[in-house]
Length: 285
Image (tube, rainbow, N blue to C red; front, side, top):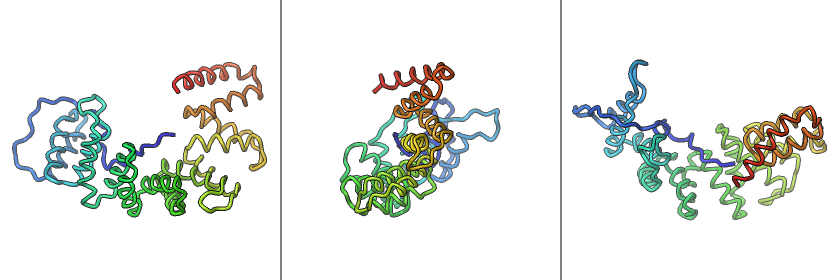
């Protein structure tokens, strides 16, 4: 399950398509905060009759960032990290890192996380750790999870409290992956914890409820088979369908097998559709 946590971006500039505009910017002197606020108004006009001025907003945002206005620096970094949908602003990870570094130096926990995130993607783990540590201490769930995963790979017991905090945060995407990792810790007895399938299942269930297809697949099978969980075919099938709906290959395969055994004739069309999807996904691997 790929997790980039782009929802953490401070505002929504990174999500907008930047389009060309020939309308000149106002020549009046504006403070950086006024530039930023005007950029926001250009993106969301007061009436439905007006069209958003993406190019004008981007220009103002750049000016505000160049003047050192922190919210503008963060949003501009997000634009460069994601790029624009129409391609007018290309992805530029180094530019994004440069801007996030400026914001991180000024104490932005979100910027500290993104510095760590970009450096991790560049396989510069040692350089990423200090940034992730700062953001994790400031309570950023994404940073707690990513730093926890790094420490888990090093068999460092400090990983456990970090992953636990991430798994009990209010960020659903983080809860999903962090809870699944907590489940593996208790299932396999990692980090000095005694192996405990009941505790592992509790974390897997939390992960499944938060939307992780791996956990949905695992708990779904447990419900279908019975044993660690009381057999409940309805719950099992529902969870397999949720995981399969996220294109999770093991869940699609398990769902096909389940429907075939349940009633191959009655579910023939659905089995065929899932099998076609499974083949397409496997060919992409």
